[in-house]
Length: 334
Ligand code: PEP
Ligand code: MN
Image 1 (cartoon, rainbow, N blue to C red):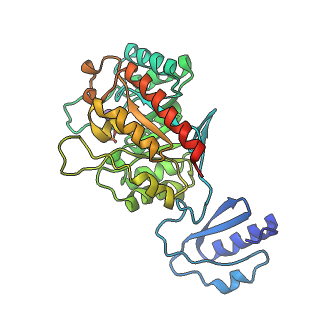
Image 2: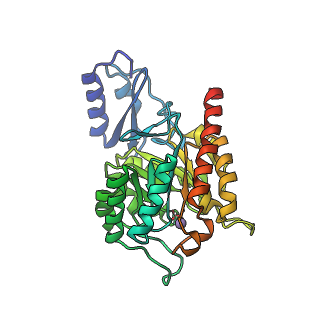
Image 3: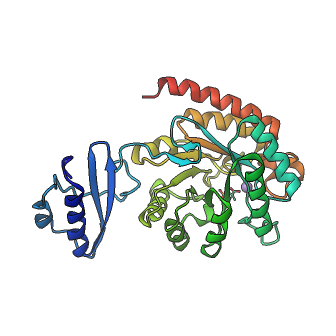
């Protein structure tokens, strides 16, 4: 639209397009707005629309990415939750145990990570485990423990929703809903979370290409929820020195295509405690907007993902090091 187009002109153009059977999404930029058109069962006939007052141009895109792409939103998306900004110049480090095991465990970990300066606590009340015999999470009592952590330490809560049935329940306790790797292409779950007004942490599927990853984010955004945070967590390769191969090159690749923030999970990405700090440093240096790190006060006794969980002391060191790297980058970022 022309930068001089009035709100009435914009509304009228949207109405006309929708009457033809298409969906419209308003994209607000620094120099006016664009109307993104999706859906329909045939190509849009541009002539009638081009003649509408306020219309500057009609551009057809052959890109598979729409709402996620920089073409439509050149500025970085910053997901703001209370006073935490994910995707801006600050680094957001989410930390906590893989699974909420009990109250004492969560309080001990939350106390330590918040003393180190973390603002976001991550712990699973519902756990997608490879084996049906492994600990599956506490469910509702786990969510209640998370609510206590939020109350007591003022930390934001990230926790996973595994199915559409429990999204509403999880959303009552979470500040950010995690969609796990195994669910990255669960399209009915993506559609459900797309209809909610809550930030979503979308983890990359373990064999997903960048296109599949961004298309999963597109599903969420197409439902109206634009608060999506991407998370690289490693992919399956032939190597056996790590649990997964942390694909840090996806960070600059995503940044080129998309305006969405992307954080990195070096815990699942390596599966090994001793590799978490070095790969965290590398992730931040590669331009990640934050990290997701598994921390346990007694990693050997952890009910899930103990071998990749770092101690609170290691977490303290990690935070100091990545903040220093981010400080340097902020000085040179263009
Ligand atoms: C997790 O975050 O604890 C988890 C199960 O991760 P992912 O979905 O990446 O395997
Ligand atoms: Mn885990």
